[in-house]
Image (cartoon, rainbow, N blue to C red; front, side):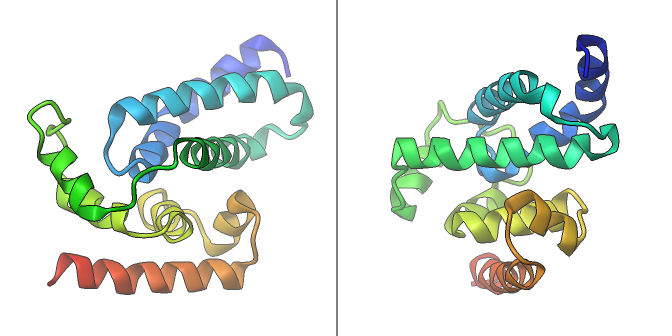
Length: 158
């Protein structure tokens, strides 16, 4: 894949990449943009490994998902929900999101459930496509989505 092809494909898929990472980062646009930049760099470096242009979008989102997981592991993000709510309520926090309650609820999900729910409901991928992106079985994805929905219902409808 040459540079022009890569730029054309990135231009077409950039909003999807940012939307996924924003959901995975629970509305933290700055972190999502940082991860998107890292993902694009990794994708460019590995672009010669992609043979089929039609598979670019899932390939790019898999790189973004892996980048998100690696970042999460490296930072050892605090899982205490009360502490996260305090950060979200801070005046300096990004309050421009219209869906902050949803992002707060997504933040309470585990990474696998959050990713499955975000890819399936927010991005519109099929179960099979989600399984391909996160490198797991379709049955596991169905289970993650089911559990994620159950948890979201509980978090959003106390």
